[in-house]
Length: 141
Image (tube, rainbow, N blue to C red; front, side):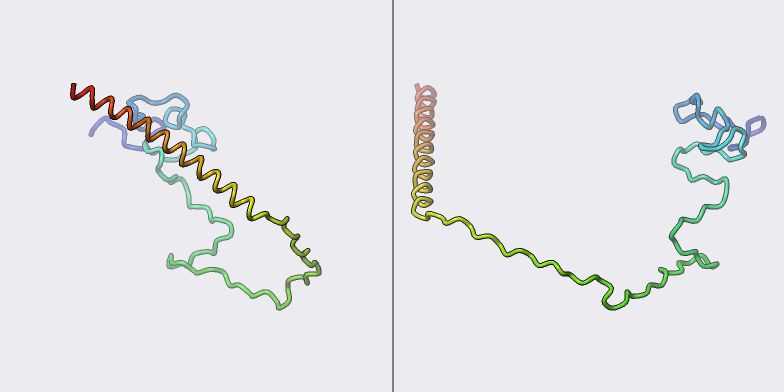
């Protein structure tokens, strides 16, 4: 429209997404993040927009793209020479002997633990049965 600034025309090109320009942002100070005041960079309303102030810097370690814009492929690799690993001179120590186990004592301990488990379960079952009988007699009478 006539009389309205074009989007991206100045440092305060548009309102902050909250409705007002936030203090200290690029919309009010005219600074590019990490740059100098007054740098001529178009300001986007979206905080996630890619910078458009110059060509993209090449990423170190990546192969340059072909002029057609396609992927040039990975850089060539050369296999390591045979025998490139150093020889191993260390011998692993043999495993130690385990202490002897008393199998009869282990079986007796397992049987005692099983009897305790059954006793606790029987007591819990009896308590639940008594509570069930009390609740049913209360509901019937």
